[in-house]
Length: 66
Image 1 (cartoon, rainbow, N blue to C red):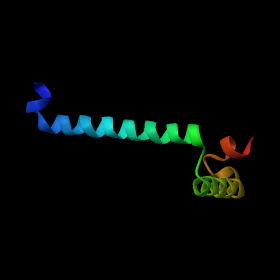
Image 2: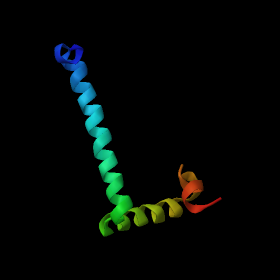
Image 3: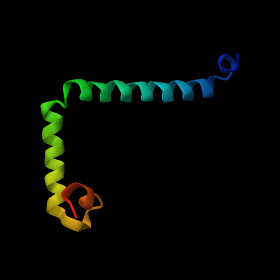
Image 4: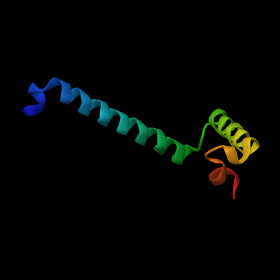
C-alpha cells in the first residue's frame, strides 16, 4: 500500500525499473543478433579517433593498448 499513496517514490521506482528493463532488452538484442552495422561503424570510428588522439585520451590505454 505504501507505493499507492507515495506517488513520487513510485514514479522514481518505475523509472528505475523501466530503464533497467530497457537496457537488458537492448543488450540481449546485441548478444543474440549482433550490433547493427551503423552502430558498429560508429564504434569503429570512435576507436580510430581515440587511437589518433593518443595517450592524452582517457580511454587510450584500454582501447589501443599500452
